Amino acid sequence: MRPAPTRGGPHLHLGGDSPSAGPVHGGVGGDRVFDMSRISVVIPARNEEKLLPHCLFALRQQEGDDFETIVVDSASSDNTQQVAESFGVRVIRLEEPGVARARQAGFEAAHGDIIVSSDADAITEPDWLQRIVAPFTDPAVIGTFGTIELTGQRIWTRLGHAFFTGFQAVNLRLGHPLFCGPNFAVRKDAFLEVDGFRVNGRYPNEAEDVLLAQRLKKRGKIVFLPHNKVVVSSRRLDKGQGLRYTGHHAGVYLKVCWFGNARRGRKSRQLHLDQRS
Image 1 (cartoon, one colour):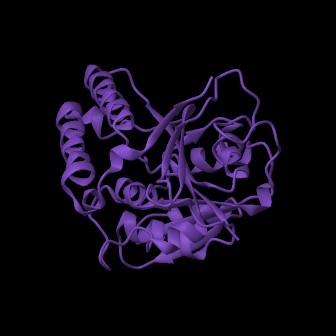
Image 2 (cartoon, rainbow, N blue to C red):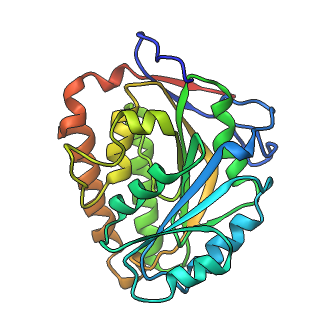
Image 3 (cartoon, helix red, strand yellow):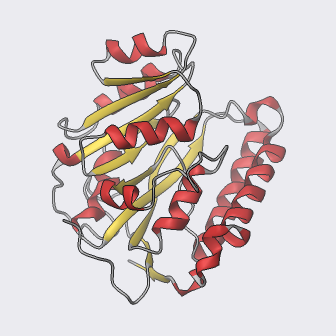
């Protein structure tokens, strides 16, 4: 059972991982091998028959194969369910769409006590999974998150990505961890304690990952792993609306982090930023 969080306030840690580090090297976890049978990876998917195979193939290449993979088919009208089943993963079918609803269903159904979030368009490196779970060898850690990199070389893609990366870095320094759906992990018991992705009994239309992070940060350590990245599709930014899209989401994050209900607990700036070498 996870020990109760300390009363000295939550902690935000900058993990000391590096591109040259071993597959289980993380912000806290050191070089100990993590028991992968304790891990569940949850992937929400809606009409993702084209991109989902690439995601699942990359997961097959992960170091350690005892983890559970769950694809939550969010009311797809294509062959998403059949594609997932062809990879032999566990499939949950929902008749009502919504990414927060899909993540919630997958997280609640997961058998693992550490749940890793991914997306159907996410491509991972072979050591990604072990890196993101390594800090959980510290029982005080309740969450970890990494970075994302977008495909494509269009100017809007590059500008949008640069804008969001800088925005994420600033918020991190100010004590606001910004989970990104394709690349974070949590302890299941902590997730359930805060009612998961639901807010006042309802599912948010967006920023469900950031809302979750704001509630979790009050309960224990959250570790940022800046070199543990996933590559995701830039399809939204490739429509020539990169700055508009990222600007909209930056506004949502500002509302969540600084003006929303999660801010009322004051003061999130009490979080400690521990730069690890």
